[in-house]
Image (cartoon, rainbow, N blue to C red; front, side, top):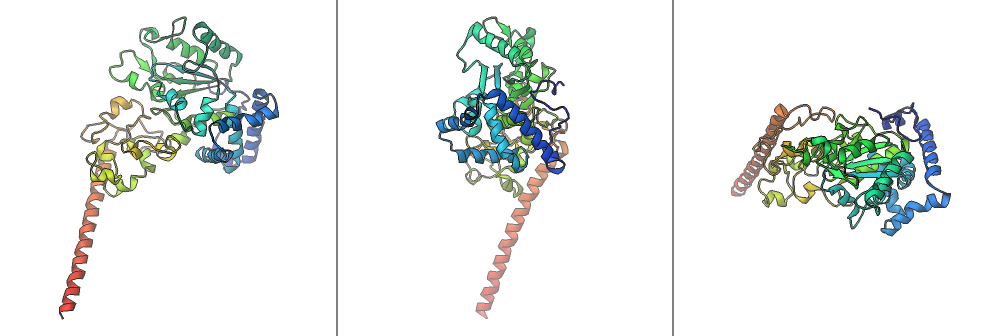
Length: 426
């Protein structure tokens, strides 16, 4: 994997490890980060006034106050597992990100990630930043078309070699030498365009499940032989799966790259550990009901009204690694479980084939799933097996235990009542 030779201002001896910053030499790390930020600001901003007014003006257009942005910076600092002293540097990096050369390619997709970022009526700081990056090429929003559009992409590849950010949305069809997907005035295949553009990128991100692992286009029987981005390039690819991906996870990854010029620490599936190191189930606000054996068993039943656990309705939260339950979507407004529907596992590989049907109990649907108690790096290797049996047994046990405790409490109340009646009679 060639992940160190295509970054701007990168120090080869600087290993990005947030925990190492805190425990060993945070002062030296801060100096290196500040040096990089200074160099990038000098390159991308004309003067001090330009640098200071860029992002605040953009936020002002959307009614986001400076206080709101500082709160968001603190939140992102915490999410990235960085010391609090990094908060002002996160703000600087976000500002620089709006000027960094950016290429966004659409392959075989529904454009759900694009729509999620450009159609939001009440955008978060992350969504605003994504809307104002220096987009040199993005088919859905750019003014040039045809040969002019392709010329702009080629110019960026040459002029900003090793500096531009490449984001790919959608799976890449490889069947018939990629001819299932052709783009632009020249009719080049998506496969050729992706390989050509990835070669000189500073950092490469696969956004959404389709780009990360093939998604729905790669579902059985996969007539176009669609694959994820990492299957068609020898460069390191950062996967940010989900359908759509959360803007916080995208911007957090890009901000970390701006800070140090390297990709974040990744799990074995290519996902940033800071965002994908825990299961939805671990932090779900319905988790207490799971432990108590309280489940929604029919849509609209009393359990649904009381927001009981959705596991019996096919929720894939115990098998899905993502931060939806902590970051949520739409300004922390909601996410699937809060909206009353179980997780469908859209940040996992082969989720369409492996996780369906989505709304039946997992056992009844005979779904083969990775081990529930596996770590992020083991995920995708172990099968449900005994772990799945353990979940079912645990659920049954807690349910029975709760009923026994309720029955015991009722009997004790009846005994107390009988004692009171006997005393009154005497």
